[in-house]
Image (tube, rainbow, N blue to C red):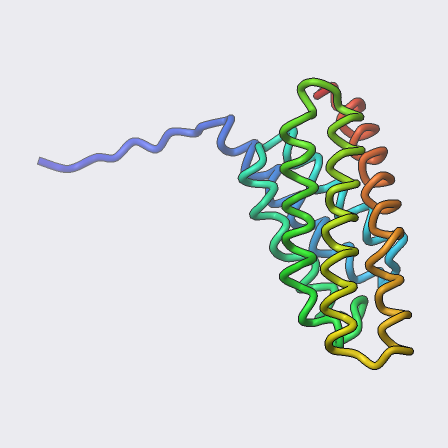
Length: 170
């Protein structure tokens, strides 16, 4: 008796895999632009789009790579390496804040998630940076982790909205 195995094509799983790989690729490539005002909105948009298309768990998995890559390609100065775990956590906070509120109001989810990300990252960076760096460098580096984080998260929300509206997912 010969054993046979039937392969089936699950269209939904294939689509989800393609979406995940596409979002991961964009979020991975974005830090190569070496520009916070380009990279930040693109990466934040990928996280928010992932929440809508793939769920918050997959978005969290997606959030693990971009900051590590940004450090590796020089977008983040090497002295910020101790901040990587906090950047990842701040991205997870953005994802969860958006996830919890988007069904009530998409924009409320964007604003609250962005604010929570900003507050967490700014407060932790203030402590970590001041412990590890000389004052003159700490001031410059903490500026990267302050209001630009809020602005790039909000711009990412606008990009995500435009994309999701365009593909009729909202």
